[in-house]
Length: 289
Image 1: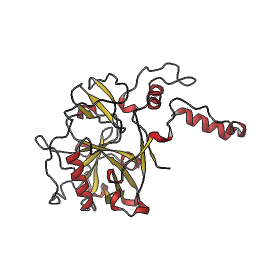
Image 2 (image 1 turned 90 degrees about the vertical axis):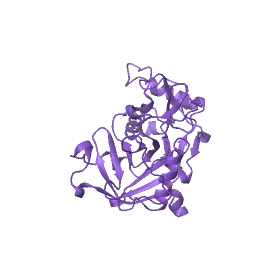
Image 3 (image 1 turned 120 degrees about the vertical axis):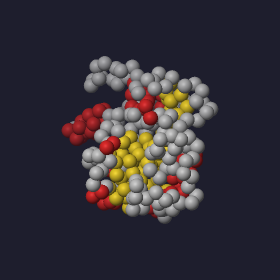
């Protein structure tokens, strides 16, 4: 993070340096490392003021919950609902709350518990030790993954999106969602279905005033942040659809990128960490050029 900032200040100060291209790094992505996120895996939430939040869905890891979310978006269910909970260093939550509980007919109230998948099919980056799992790494399609060697699951990192639920056996329909806005609450792993990740617009959810009620719920409905609409990108006109790409992790270039995050270099860093938490090494996502 600091290197680009330092480079920017240098370019501003010296036109001569601006003409010197940085040497290629083994950690640089090749053009083909950037893979398109399909339109039907992008959720576009528009808040009051026109602020937009873009969420990449994870149908491979929570197919039933993501199917529900797609049906809810297609039915315009979230239109007129709100962001009603912001708990400091924890989560921001949105949906109908107690005001809107009737779901579209095709939505399953309690899908199967998709907290982990039974067959561990490997991670593409060198697996690392972890406090909450035997190992962590990245799936080939860019998701942060933990495993015990038999099963695997997505991890509650900053910006990940999960399905709020009541006490078990409730699994949550997907109508009430949250995103992590603080230190990664990894104790939630394998207890709640993770269905995606905010890839742009996180500031519109993480910088909101904190709720004063229990668990960060806004006590006054005037504090709620209205949701104008939530749509799949496939519901939008072609010329209005956002396009994003994730960085593939199944190559030596990403392994080198990960190594650089584990061992930050001088002149700023004097003590390399020798490792990185999975949540401090999420695979990059960018707008398609």
